[in-house]
Amino acid sequence: MFRKIVQSASVAALVAGLLPAAANAQGPADKRTYFTFSQPVTLPGVTLQAGTYQFRLVDPTSNPRIVHVLSEDGSQSYAMLMSIPAQRLSSPAEPEIHFMETPSNTPAAIKLWWYPGDPVGHEFIYSDEQAALLLAEDPAGEPDAR
Image 1 (cartoon, helix red, strand yellow):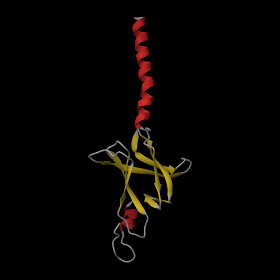
Image 2: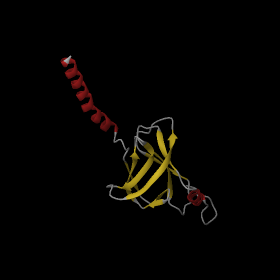
Image 3: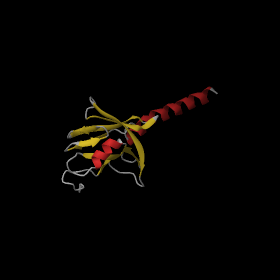
Image 4: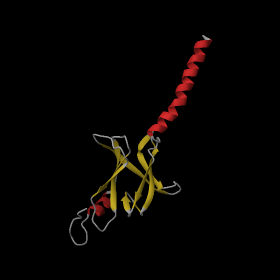
């Protein structure tokens, strides 16, 4: 009996020792991703200036729909955003961001973020007011051709 308990404990310790390595091999649990923008971009309620930013999930286990946007080093928070699941047929190999069409006189607006290997991405939720501004025509009266 004692021998079985020792064997079971050894197997459990071995499996527990392998789990963190397997999780790290797939990437961080919070899906931390870095994006560098060469010009300002818009997210719900905030415009980010050109630079590198960290996107990550606040709590991937209990609420995987809240995205935190921080400075590259994580020292400054710029936004905590609600998202809705965005399903696609295949998983991206690299991190991806998709932009919505906006007038040429406004910063590009980020619509979707996908983490590598995950077919379910994050669609950002814009307020009706901000969405109306982003979808407005440019001052010349022509829709943006981006």
